[in-house]
Length: 79
Image (cartoon, rainbow, N blue to C red; front, side, top):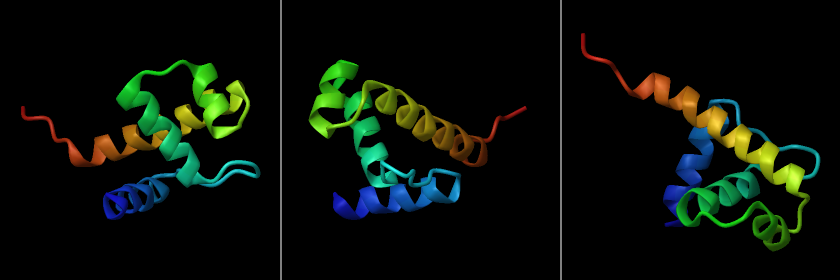
């Protein structure tokens, strides 16, 4: 499980996900996977990871943006 997480992390880093001054990319990915997998409230994620709700929003957005860039490279549309 950890190997898969780290591989995804490294892939997303190559697509623009990066550490910020306060939050590492690992934490951003962890928060985002928890949101996608369990649909918790933003407040509960902020409390669990001890960050502001604004940070949850911005880091989730950063991860989604990296995933969208990855998507455009791995999904091909048949014509």
